[in-house]
Length: 156
Image (cartoon, rainbow, N blue to C red; front, side, top):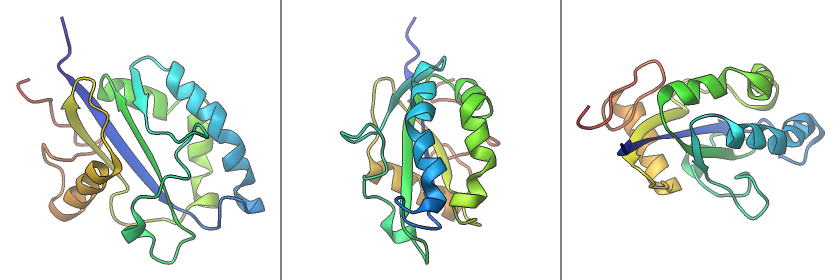
């Protein structure tokens, strides 16, 4: 039986300094291992990446830069919220997550949004930007939600 729907997730981060700064060296060094861990995680389907194998050079969310050194984006699809949650809070990703305040500005508004996409769909950054704006403006809904407010897929 086919799932019918995949879970899309986007998260963004406002950089404290440019990616080539010594302050972000540990973060940059962790990118490839963290991405490899994601790709091997149960339930992982797809992630946005450039020819370099990550998404740090992809320009998006420039409207949200504020006084930061720029915004980086992570965009991926998963089989379920449970699979995404298991990856986020385990392994190397969890270790990197614990250090996020060293590398990224705290942002009061939502920086992560989830939504359901037709199975096999790979959302682009325009779609992701729209979902973050929707979540910030209207709160959790079928259009955009968080891991703490998951909405079932259409027809469930």
